[in-house]
Image (cartoon, rainbow, N blue to C red; front, side):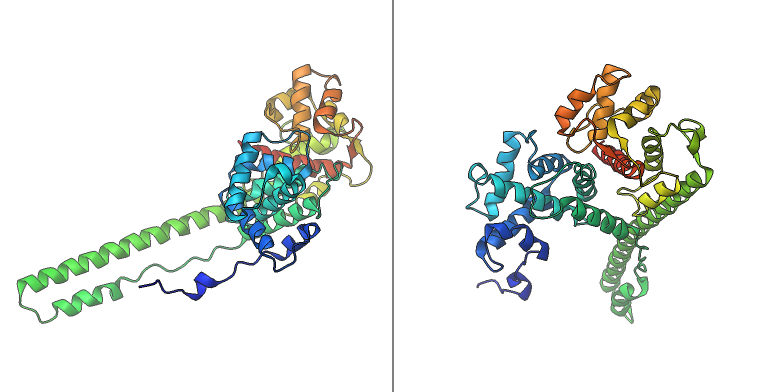
Length: 371
């Protein structure tokens, strides 16, 4: 006998609206089979993506000269071909770039994906606040900003605590079976039924209790995060350097304050009010400071003790990569030329104090997620 086909089995999986815009240049049409195959291909990869897949996806999406390994690209191609048989990476370089960006968006927009925060943060930091320009059909940094806000709001919702399992209804069958019975075998069966009902109820309540405890712990972390950020802001004192915000060197202030705010962030990707918090910490949105100047101005021993990250990526963590290079060469600017070449950024790249702090804050969270 053939299996019964339900409505759920035949429901068509439609691409998200943004996917039509991102793939419009390939002239597929909204109802084409190839479009559906592409959507299913990126969905299949995104659903199984690991943290280590995010960096290669970013490098493909922005067309970085530091491309992923051929082995990783072969794995990506193999996954795509399961849903999209016509795809070949070697003859579809542009399409591979666009689909990699779409994978990042797909991952970032799914709060249940373990790599969502990582993908959204990496997509945001790699633009270096607009210093890098991408040849993509959509605005990847803006989409990343929207995903970061959505991820935070999704995680910040007050948990709904469900009621436990009621024991009485589970015992009714056993009570009915035992009522008025004199036969020992029947009574034994009734007791066994009651025991099974009790075990089932205990197991269900234990599972529900664990979910409730985890939800409450998460909520407490959120409240503690907000409280610690507030006290730090009210105190207006650098915890690492034991001085007031105003006594910090002007060029170094964005890095120091961003690092300390990130240290109080328990739950990546951080609240959407980070820019406002940094602004309240007296970081101005006008005027600019060069990235290399900010790194050079930060106390060398502070960088060594609190910020060192030897595995920093020049693509997604250019500021941490600069710090790693400076720690290798010592105080001074001997590292700058090599850093600029590796990151594809101009040596005089500059941002406002506020924007630089927000960028470094996100890099700090990204570094933590990468472990």
